[in-house]
Picture (tube, rainbow, N blue to C red):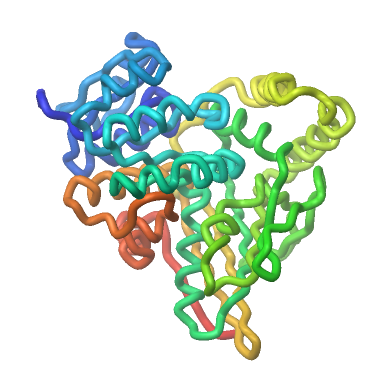
Length: 371
């Protein structure tokens, strides 16, 4: 057992945490599996067959800044998988800054991303530390497709659609219920513009004959990744799932929120969305099956006189998150990170590098063409 672990996975006992642990083990990276309950950590880590014989340690830690800072001292990377992040994430980030650790997380919550950019981006950059929320399928996949599109000179407009066919974890449900009730933005003519609340849109997905109902899903991380990027004038993101009955149910809850909870305090709203999230998903799904849990990311990109289509066809979005998180940790340990401060996943390791890893492990393929 190592006495000098350099990677901490906080929230390791959850659905996504176990996938990150698997992918760290695949890369031969020792790690600390941290959480608030020692017995649960040990029980859940024992369920990951790829951890047999791997060097890791389960550590219980109180959910407070000082306790985190003590645990993180001397470490290089913290991967935070404990959400909802707007409710639970601040002390983890503060402790990373205190202890001099790179911070990566798996959030989909764009209001959390905006908070990190505003309050912590410059502080992390000053210490030459990376601050990368949403270092995960959402919102890295669209970031990958966008970077491929932007390789074509003159492209300045990005329209992205995520399409997935996976069940949703307990923590993800709590996160998306709260984040979809907050202000959601797209970038239009170099300004962030708010989407209408509780409104769905039909989208066409490459390779599918029928249209699907989609939601802004917190607005997507890509408008924020490209908010200050002079290459991008416009950026929109929509998200659809094959389970359209679930999408309709979520839309109904969001419309209900506008009537019943919009006027409540922030704390009361968080409790309201937590209650609905807990009612919606109570049991963790099984590990994804590539033959069943497939995904598409479609990016239509425009310039004044040209256009590009980039399509990523993949599978197992949650497992992709494990790959993305573990690969970022690997490159941090090797001193190969390409950016510090608040940055996108592709800025952190390089779009082609990250795409190559996902392709090599069998979770993604892609094509790009002028249209």
